[in-house]
Length: 243
Ligand code: APR
Image (cartoon, rainbow, N blue to C red; front, side):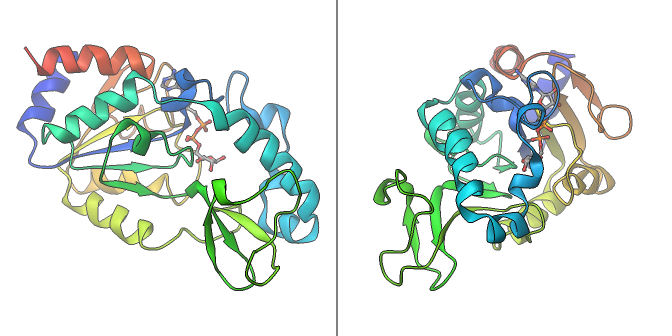
């Protein structure tokens, strides 16, 4: 399986990686669903945009606990670095990620489309001024804009919000040009992100999936299912590619 996957990647004209929370599990970030998933502990309704507008402080308290206290200290793992190496070798053209943890960038990937935005940025709901999170004191909640005093929100999409541009357009453009897709660590349950691998498949791309568990894609979209954790699978894949 790994040898076949490596051959497909090396012979592809344009291979794109599509990643979900699973690729960051070995960096210490729990997934959203499944074993010790975040949604088992926190109510996803807290991440609905209406709830944020109506209960800004309460929402920010949970956001800070999960995304800044917990996520804040993590590092990329082997899988993130392997994808960055594959990009440097010209084997992967881009990464489309549902993750907001910035770990692909920290691992050295350059062409990244953050389909759900990024925690590293905060945006003012009033005047739209953008900040990096290091510019803002998160001990005082909700954080406010230094220009206009408006409420700041992490630059990630909440349930009920539209996918940010240009990430949306770029992601679907990449999908239309790819003849190989590597899906890593995603259940495939959240729209519209979950349309991307299906669009790639219908464009004739070969689909390689890395996940220790079957996903919504495994039976219907995946051509080669590498049933391993992301870091184990990417290490095996790199060995086969370098043979
Ligand atoms: N390596 C690879 N995959 C793993 C690992 C691992 N070590 N551990 C778990 N997984 C897989 C799980 O089997 C599961 O398929 O990662 C996936 C995690 O699924 P979700 O938590 O649903 O993550 P994801 O598919 O990215 O969620 C999509 O849902 O809540 C929203 O915006 C949030 O971007 C997120 C979106």
